[in-house]
Image 1 (cartoon, helix red, strand yellow):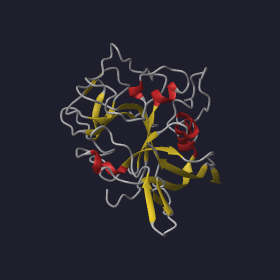
Image 2 (image 1 turned 135 degrees about the horizontal axis):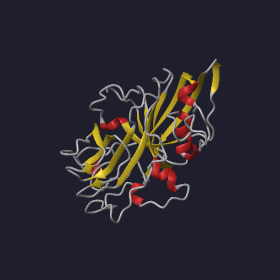
Image 3 (image 1 turned 90 degrees about the horizontal axis):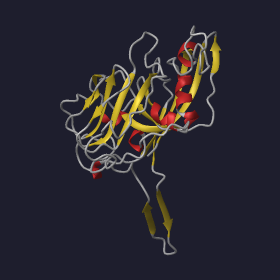
Length: 288
């Protein structure tokens, strides 16, 4: 994808972290942040590190296609093995990959994960593809709020940079494939997006309940809708992986299309503009 344009965005949801926010005890390696390359040193052993069970969630889209994924962040792997692996999203060929991060498609929830070297975070669950691209009046900002300047009495300018970029993932820069930690991109990215004419079926579930006693309709946890995205991030409390475009270069997306983000808003307003059609505005901020 050229020039970091926003196409059709995708949001990768970390279901184990959502379950942990509701009382499930999980190993810290399954949390999105922090991405620490010393989280596991010689691979993940299912005998000692239990893989969270997310079988209560339907991990398929409206057409029945799997939307399971797994992301290995801050790794020094050259190969890895996951029982339900079906394909590569970026740097996720299993048999050969570069240091940095890998995202792969799965056919179902992972039961076994085998790694040989350091991995900072193992994130898995389901992703949500927006039905179409956002409106043209979007904004992409780069914030440098960690840089503070003061002027002395003599007129000199003193600059102190508390931070200018995400912390390194071990010896690598965040969202880099190979290279060194000092090569990481600077600035905090913020996307202001508006989506018009979203169909009600892509926004709201058929049944907004969490448990369906009748078995006739999908529930909030099962239906592939944006309301489920809001629910699984606790309304913006929990981070997610944001991909600015899932269409152009879909077989080989560029690393600069990814970020760990949160929703930077206290409410989500869906404005009905026609029968069964809604508009919504989103502010997505990169976090670390």
